[in-house]
Length: 299
Image 1 (cartoon, one colour):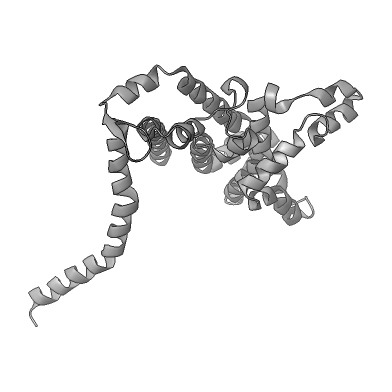
Image 2 (cartoon, rainbow, N blue to C red; image 1 turned 45 degrees about the vertical axis):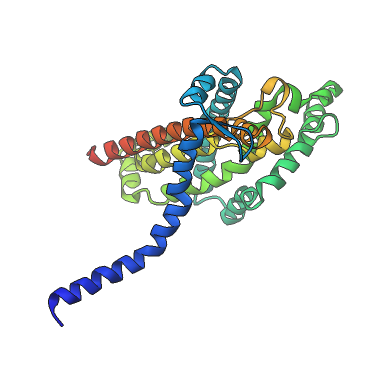
């Protein structure tokens, strides 16, 4: 057999191996993207009736106060994840990375265990915990402060975003802690020993040795947390029973997409919301890639 025939067989074999991926990628990624772009240019009334409107969906979207409310709520939640959840996860990782702490494995399992539960189950537990009067949170606050008026706090009516952030802390702090623990365990011990010889205190070691060493992982965790926050759906959907809360105070971008696409049947408007969300996520991913490359180039 000629060399050309062997090369041709190799090419055919390679395409045969790639064929399942190509088919699945086309069916589940390329086609939905094309269909979504087509739907975004149409006003739909359920799956069977549609009218071409061009860019009208996007024009209406950017002048829609409810959409901007959902954007604001989502970014408030994301900022809570960024400035409360991640620092707590890092502090917890530092504590559980200490060689002096006994039973570290048990504590790690305890803090990570909420991640083993489904979001639906966590949402139901959260609704019970933050219930007015009978909720565990109100009971604990009233007991600590010895004031029964705190039993009347209606979290799901008066403090919706705070409730979502607090439930997310319980759910995701342990999850992000695992990433930080892995990063801390890869810190060069010789650098730590050298800093101790130089007389560095705990803050000095944290600032000059630990922070630079965990920065790549921290960048990844920040991106992961931001993307997850922007895709928030199940937790507020179940807690607020798809209502968005009083004055849409708990409405998120994905919830608004769901309401328009499935409750109202306007898949075109929902697709426009989806494309705006996709552009935001792509922008965040590009920022993360740029930051990661900058860290790799920096000596």
